Image (cartoon, rainbow, N blue to C red; front, side, top):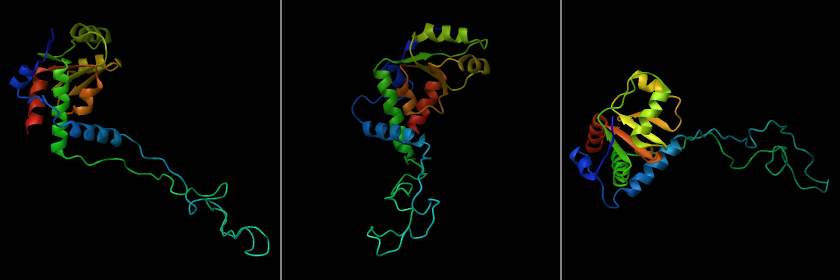
Length: 203
């Protein structure tokens, strides 16, 4: 099995409109920020003065002690008191339209094609679920470095062979997004995978 660099002309022939100017840069930025924000857990939590488990009794009488007035022990200005405007559990998700996601995917794929980092193969399959065979196949196609392998589908033996290889990730062409395409040094795409990506970009 051999891999060939996917050129701009070949990508256009496959139905992928390669962006050769500065268009869609903002769409790509917005989508990557949204994907990363969606992965944030948003579980940070602090107790306000109403949540602190302290007595609601007045610490000392209002007048006559010479000290400042105090109404409750959970005051934020005291040690052990509540936190003012502290973080609460929340969602960091951002709404991104399908049109913007499609534009970002087109831009990301175009950037990788223009850089010569996308390699096309007829198919990608390992006969036996052996990690050694998988690493040998990937190295023979694109050499060393992190690699994203995109295909319409993968056999079970290919998935099993790849699961312990940290620098390589398998993704279906129906699931790959703009951030995935930018995250790896090299991208291997099968011919059916290119067709699926073209369909996603053009619909």
